[in-house]
Structure formats: C-alpha cells, structure tokens
Image (cartoon, rainbow over all chains, first blue to last red; front, side, top):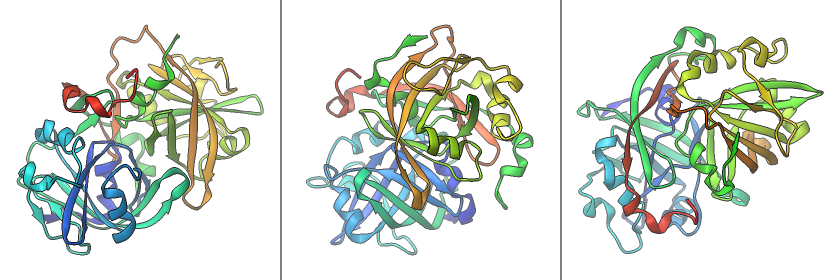
Length: 180
Length: 180
C-alpha cells in the first residue's frame, strides 16, 4: 500500500461511491457496505449514517475507529452481498475472500482488494439522526489496482459504474484546497 | 414536470451526483452547487454540509426551505461555474440561462433544465458541523430529459459521468423499501 497525502483523501469520497466500512471489535474484523456518506471538511472529515440494526453500529460506538475502504467496480456483486449478510454470524473477510491488512493508527483492518483505504477515528455521533462524524488519520492507495472505476448505488438494486471523465479544473481553481 | 413518488426520491441522491440547491429569500432566487450530501433515511431525508461563506447559507437558515435540483452531465461546465460565483452579486438563473419554475410546497424554485427536483424543508441544522437535515415534501422528474447520466465531482476539478449500469437487485431484494 502506498500512502496517500491526507489532504487528498476527500477526493475518494466526494464522488459518492459505494464504500466498505471495516471495524474490529473484540479481535473480530467486520465489514459493512455503505452508500449514505459524505465529505464534511477538506481536513478531511466525513459523515455517514447507519443505525442499531447494523452489526457494525456497536463496534463504531465502542471502538470509535473504522477504516473506509473504497472498492472498485470489479468487486461488483461482492460489495452488494457484503451488505446483505451480518457480521453477527458471518466472517465477511473469509466469506468474500478479502484480505485484512493491519492499519497504522487504528485497530480496524485495511482491505487489500480495495483501491483505497482511509483510517478514521469516530469523533462524534449525532444520536438524533444516527450520523457518525469521522476524522481521517491516514490514507492508503493500492497501486496494483489499475482500473479505478468506482461503483455508485442508485438505491433500487441497480448501480452505475464510472464512465467518461471531464476536467473543469480551470473553472474552480480558486476553490481547490492546497495540494489537491 | 411529472411527479415522482416520494419514496423513490432517495434514488436520485444515493448515487452521489453533483447537485444544485435552489433557495428563495426576499423574492430573490439563488443556486449553489453542492457535492457534500447524503441520504439519511428512505422517508426521504437528506443531509448536506455548507457554511457561512456560502451566500445560500443564510437563506437556508432563514427560510428553512430549498429545492434539491439534480442536473445531468449535459449541464457540464455550467454546474461548476454556478459554484464559482456568488448569489451576492449574481442572478445565477439569468447568467446560466436556467428557468426557475414554481414549486408546489416551498418558495424555492424548481430548475426546469434539471432532470429531477426535490422540494425540501430544512428540519434541523447541526451547527457544530454545519450539517443541514432536510425532509423531502415533493419530487419531480422532467420527462423531456432523456440522457439522465449524472455528474460526480472528484473534488480536484475533475468529474466523472455515469457509465455502464449493473443490476444486483436479486442480491438485496430484502433490503429495498416498499415501492422502490
């Protein structure tokens, strides 16, 4: 894994891809699939929503740590299936042949097969809306993954894969943070 | 505009496209470009982040209303340029040749040239993180727009347009809300 400067980590979340959230609680790794997330600050800080029906919920509240893993479209159906079973009775890393790698600053594991991994601390939980606020502490890219097209959930069981790119940098140069 | 059942409105936001947020304050319409948004509930409820540096911020706090307009990739550079000027000194509808249409339940206008428009009430503002919580009250589709590919901001001035689709509905049927 190659370290990604932290000020670039928000560029992995801003496009709105489907994410995997890894947690580790009582020595047990787990994964959840998540589409309800957003950037809230370039520093970077992120927000996502989940609730007590999710097995990862208690691990997030208790450990106050997680890794945001950014899968590419190649992981395809596995991403969806990870969201359709529970860590309560399933070792998802084993079931979906994913490799947990030690993170630098949190106990939750990186996911080797994902294009990017962002180590995060849970710095707030807005109970009223079940919104978790995360601060990233380290970010990693897997340089072996060449096709970096991300997957976006429509929410009805269909998904879109990244298509053509556009560069509008000249229209927003003054809005970009340093180093991005 | 054709009415979209409210329970389907989250499917416009979940894929993470760049959005336009319309507001109306003191009889003046305004638009902002926004990528930092997420679904927080199927009902539907949404969250987004913006701050006092944004001219729309006070209108959102004061009127507690907005429209989330979902532009397609055809609006291209205009979407970016709308985010690079301010409603303080610019009539963005006029400058970018966009047509404000009256909404049914809020004073903020729909944007005719956008594929979808979701009328929302601001039901909460989490000041600590400048997160706005919205509840949708009506949703509309412009059936004249046939190419519905959305635009996703990477955050570095580049953007991706929706590409190939995948249908994984069979893997998550039990997770889909009724009518979706």
